[in-house]
Amino acid sequence: CSRPPVPHDGCVPADERFRRRGAWTTVREIALDDDDVTMCAGVRVLTPEATALDLLRVRRRFGMRDAEALRGLVVAADLDPSSLGRCLAQAERAPMGRQAQRRFRDTGFDRTDRSPA
Image 1 (cartoon, rainbow, N blue to C red):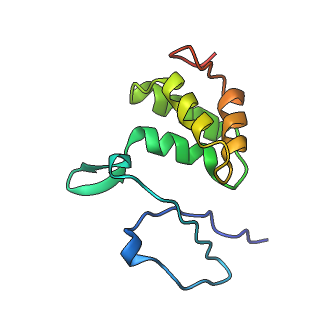
Image 2 (image 1 turned 45 degrees about the vertical axis):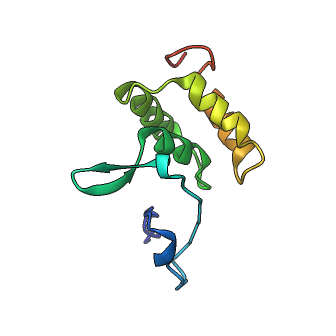
C-alpha cells in the first residue's frame, strides 16, 4: 500500500509566488518581515526564531518528533522561550495561533524559563 509523499516546505519571495495547484500541492502563504530572514552561506533562510514559530503553526499533526526538533532548535540556537511565548501571544488571532500556543505549552516550555520542562 503506497502512502502519499511527505509534505515539503519552501519559501520564496512574494513576487515569485507559486500559483499551480494539484492533487499533491498545498500552498500556504505567510508574510515575513525583513528580520525573519537571514543569509546563510549565500542563501536566504528563516531565522531560528521564525523557524520555531513556523514549526508551531504548521497545519499537520504535531508529534513527539516535532516537539523534540523544536526543543533542539531552541537549545542549539540559544533562543529565549519567553520571547517565543510573547510572539505567540501577540499572534494569537493569526491562523493556527492558538494551536501554536498550545503546542508550545505541550512541548514543555515555561514562558519564564530558558529551558523545556
